[in-house]
Length: 91
Image 1 (cartoon, one colour):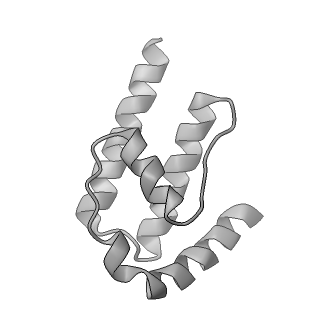
Image 2 (image 1 turned 180 degrees about the vertical axis):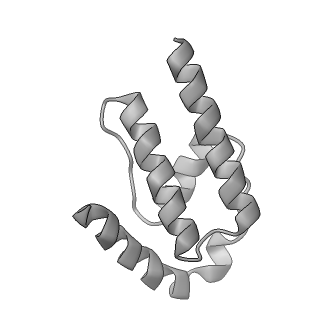
């Protein structure tokens, strides 16, 4: 939980500095979400795809709560992550 709270404070700082850069998102895939995370030097990789998706979902939720994502982008990102989870469970 420390990592999440630390990232939230980083997100809050970055939201003040990078508002214009991060508000124009076109999330179409997990790769787009990962690229968005890279703007904050955040890499989600645990060698466990399910855990990666869980962490990404949590970070997207925290970013939205911190005001870094508009509602439309937030919903798109969550939909993409949930679709990936379903695909992962089928395999």
